[in-house]
Length: 115
Length: 111
Image (cartoon, rainbow over all chains, first blue to last red; front, side, top):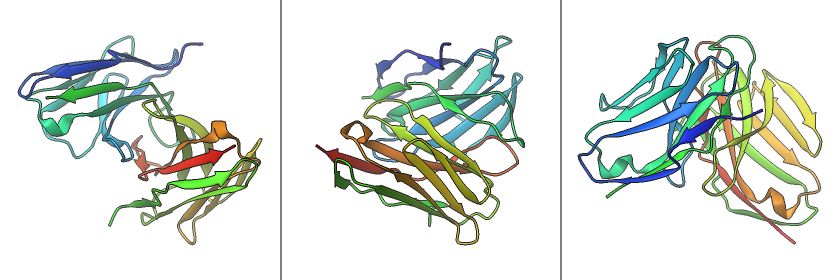
C-alpha cells in the first residue's frame, strides 16, 4: 500500500511569494495534519483536518491556511513568505481524529527554501 | 520551558551496544506516547506507540512510559549502524490530533 505522499519534494521561493503544498493520505485515512520542522528541531503542529473540517490549529500566523478535499487530500498554503518559513513541511495521516488509540504516519515532506 | 524535553546529543555508541533514549514532559494531559525515527532529510517513521504507563516491546526496541515521573524511554538492543538517525519522542492527549514533539536525539552507531 502507498504511504503518505507529498508534492513537490523541494521548492525554492522568494520572500513575499506564495506557496501551495500538497498531501495525499494513506487510503482509508480521513485525517490530515500539517507540521513544520525547522532544521535541528522537532516538528511543530500547524493544522489538523478531519472530514474536510479544521479540527485544530497551532500557533502560526494567518499567513498559513489549509483545506481538505472530498477525497481527503489536503493543501497547505503560505502567503507572504518570510525567510523564517524555510523548513521541512510534513503531512501526517491517521484514520481517526481524537480519543481512541491510533497511529499517525508521516510523509517524506516538502523542503521549502525561501531566499 | 518546553513541554517536551529531549537531549539533542549526538549520542555515539559502538555497534552492538544497548542504547537508551529519553524524554521528559510537563503536561499531565498527555496519554499517548510515540517514538519516531528520522533519517536525514526524510519524514519521521513511526517506531513505537504506547498508551499510558507501562512497557511495550517490538523486536530490538522497547518503549517505557512512567507517567508518575513524566518520563519516557526507548531502548534499542544490539544497535546497528543502520540505526544511526535522529529519534523523536512525541505525545498527545485525548482531545485532538496534535502531537507535541521533543527536539530529537541524534544517534550514531559506529561499526
